[in-house]
Amino acid sequence: MNRTLRAALFFVVAIAAWELLFRAGIWSPVLVPSPLTVGRYLGEALIDGTLWDATLVTMRRLLLGYLFGIALGLPLGLFTARYRLLGDTLGLVALGLQTLPSVCWVPLALLWFGQTESAMFFVVVMGTLWSMIIATDNGVRNVPPIYARAARTMGSSGVHIWVKVMLPASLPFIVSGMKQGWAFAWRSLMAAEIYVTILSGFGLGNLLHYGRELNAMEQVIGIMLVIIVIGLLADKILFSPWERFLHRRWGTAR
Amino acid sequence: MTVQTEIQNETPSKLSVQHVSKRFRSGGRVVHALADVSLEVGEGEFICLVGPSGCGKSTLLNIIAGLETADEGRVFTGGAPITHPGRDRMVMFQESALFPWLDVLDNVLFGLALKPGLSKAERVEVAQFYLKLVGLEKFARSYIHELSGGMKQRVALARALAPNPRVLLMDEPFAALDALTREQLYGDLQRIWQEHRKTIVFVTHNVREAACLGDRVALFSPHPGRITAQFRVGLPRPRDLNSVELARHATEITAALKGTTVPAEEFAI
Ligand SMILES: Nc1ncnc2c1ncn2[C@@H]1O[C@H](COP(=O)(O)OP(=O)(O)OP(=O)(O)O)[C@@H](O)[C@H]1O
Ligand SMILES: [Mg+2]
Image (cartoon, rainbow over all chains, first blue to last red):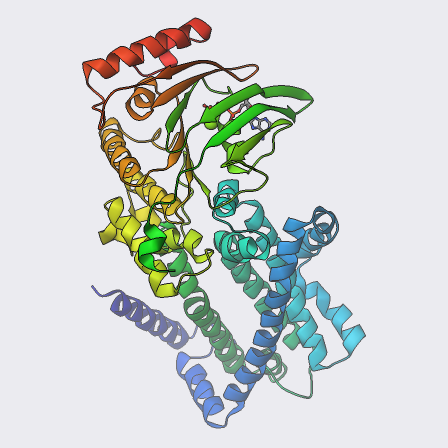
């Protein structure tokens, strides 16, 4: 059987089971709404634009902070691997801060930046940056020394060796760091959006929060589904191509 | 510069190793890897360095490559002292040092790309010439992990030859291969060496391999690493690994080697 078909069938069965449980009337419909109610909410939110707007707001916050975190973390990771002084200082800081769940940055961000986009940006950057530094640093340290030696005999040195050898050679580590950074950033952004309202834009987290305030279970579940779908899509669109590239080149296919 | 002039033979250069010593300090212990080693290698000569593990063969090769510096003594190629790695001396390592993120052709192109004076198209042509020379022109777009061990070392050979070095340094390049593949590569290496004269320094554990490939075989002994004997192998080429003549030379060298050091099991005869 086709894999897509199989997956589709699975979801149809799962939703049917959900509907059956709903009809059985074991739980209050306020706590467990019918999939049809949830579907209707999503349809309406889509038509009146709230869902689309919230998704855009959230994705903009996420991508902005994430790309900045990567653009900053990658060179910093190279430097911490290259210069012992930076490795002993910044590397240690990164290691420490990476153990801090990135949600913990939210209160600090709010005190520093107030209820502004800057606070959101800051939280997302903190979620991405440390993972990225550590992954890159780790990746460089795990490059077999023979690669650099071979490159040097072929006339490579300095920046050329870093860009053409060390960077691509540590790609497997860097990609997994990017993935981890994404996961941390995504989680902390959701927490921040649920926790604080920023007038310049309602994200998915805000919708989730208001769903609770309004006791609208169909909204809570509907938004949760949207968040899950975005996570899945990010994985498939952002990371799968990289991982396929790595598997093909390094021959580490499953 | 054109492709034709680029792949024309570069005159091989003379190598002169003069009183080289090298010590390593590791964990408070000092290893005397090389002690006053001197060695002259003629233009276009094929010399094999044979000796037990840890006697400093790789260290000497790395010093000639410019990847490491000697504590004492100096090394000259074509009259100039060696201070840095350079494309006039290319190295082939025991384990494949090919880059997995590049395909076969791009691996061969890596060293060429750093050579001035060639257009992109010309470089590709040069790279393809060397891939053909090692019999892998059909695999230009394969990834490294898709190749067998023997094919990998062929690519490594093509990559080392591509910048047209004067000296080729080979550190046990065939040690990890099976006997049959190795024998094929002996044949190919001799053919290539005869067509594209290079000065070759070839490190090996295998006495028979040394007798098969080398014009001359230098024996090393460890602790401290030094050259204890040298043998000239005057057999006509291409040499057959299984010939009686060659076996006679190998036996002679092995006897000398046993005399100086180590248990015989270490050496394939
Ligand atoms: N970077 C290093 N640091 C410390 N000791 C080293 C280093 N490189 C080599 N040595 C020591 O120097 C000695 C010579 O090493 P070398 O690699 O040159 O031996 P070799 O003859 O190539 O051995 P093999 O045949 O096993 O490759 C060994 O005792 C080794 O432990
Ligand atoms: Mg060695």
